[in-house]
Length: 467
Image (tube, rainbow, N blue to C red; front, side):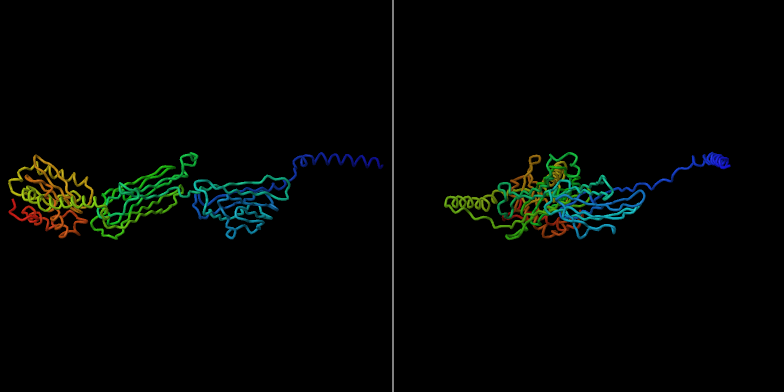
């Protein structure tokens, strides 16, 4: 009986197994949680920095997968030209500082949860003596502790230290000496402004773009006691200066008649530019200052003194007695032109109506004067001579005006005192208006009377009947 019951149990068990087999075949164990992992990132808040500036580094640690990281060590190492600002470092709530000095900091973090990002903010100051024109590198590293062998994560950030890429220098000479002799009235001084990219051309070509000065602009300031040309070089923009490239701006200035002994005369230069990150750098500034001196005394040796005195006596006799008598009294002035320094004709008068018929001569004279104005250097009044169709002309360059007279007899050089006297009369009558003259002849109402007086001999030094 027992045997029959046991056999029946086995048969029943076999039937149950066969019936449940499909269900067991379809079953698989539920998956285990995925492995927890993390990623590390590092970035700086700028691509380039100067000495004493602060670079702020940001570290990201992103936890992924399931569960959490039980214990992680994070550290940051910076270049020796940088110094970590330990008191200003901010770290996640789950982390604590293990060690910190000027170039290295380490933190330990616990129970970092999956799906979260943990952020550090680490300021670093560029050293006051940091090496110019190179990269400084910061390296972040993170590693999981207590989880068996693990490979640390690392991240890097590079910042260019663009320091003193441009150098500004202002030098002066008096065309004979360097540095120039103490200036006196009429001294000619040559100034040169030099701006150089001091990075050598041997720099790695891949770094040249980072070591270029962009949007370089030079501005030059000049003392009112110096006369110079009207060149556009006073403000000298240039797109960029690559390593070893330079700009030279050279000009000549003359100590004008407005200066007195003891007055300071100066020239300065300012340069600003941008780095690769479009940050403005500068201004860099340089200035030269001189004091107007009295003319130097004569040499003390007797021979030189006697020679100078003899020459001076002869010059005085010729200038005051012989030349005026033989020269000035024999002058015949046919035409007089008054031209503004801009080249605009203000007034033209002729000695007689018959002279106006020679239109070609007058036109040629005016064109020559305009060319003279364009080429002239605004200095103290000086006299130049021109020749036209057998007649000669004297041209006086003044501060704001050019006076020209055409003579048919006599030497034009004897016209200088009269031209200078007429120019002074015009400056006295219309000096302020001539500085920024707007082109209206009506505003210079004394020009006509002064020129008429000039033609009539009103500015002669020698007595006698005018011819």
